Length: 166
Image (cartoon, rainbow, N blue to C red):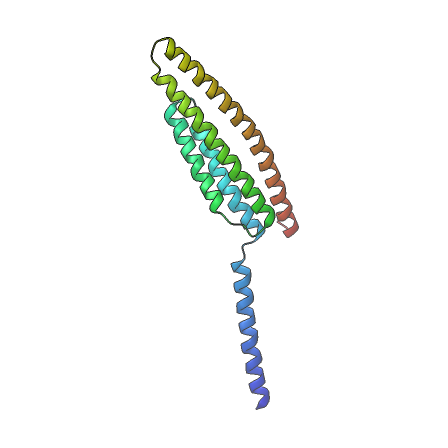
């Protein structure tokens, strides 16, 4: 009889241990799923750029708003993997910079549309063009940084997948 009671306690403890282990495994997001989650967010931002790029005030303004949303999503995203958290922070900075650069270029572009046909208007247009060029050049270099960082992220995530055997 004592054996039966010990057996039941052992089975109960084993069941509890198994449940806690499964809960811990499923509660902790894997590196692979974290990689996929970060890549999905970054791809959303990149797709916004591809969809809304152009020289129209409304599309540039919309793009700046979309990039701000992606920045906020990145800022709010949390990653258990420290390397992915670093990537996340860097991508948030990149999208914030793009938001500011494209937003400033959009405002300058809007200024050219409302400039008066006068000497002062021509001066306004000249200043606006300089502002547009400055911000688009900055956005170009931000894009270069994005490309390098995205390649590094893919390499890191591919190493993670290979070490797991996918």
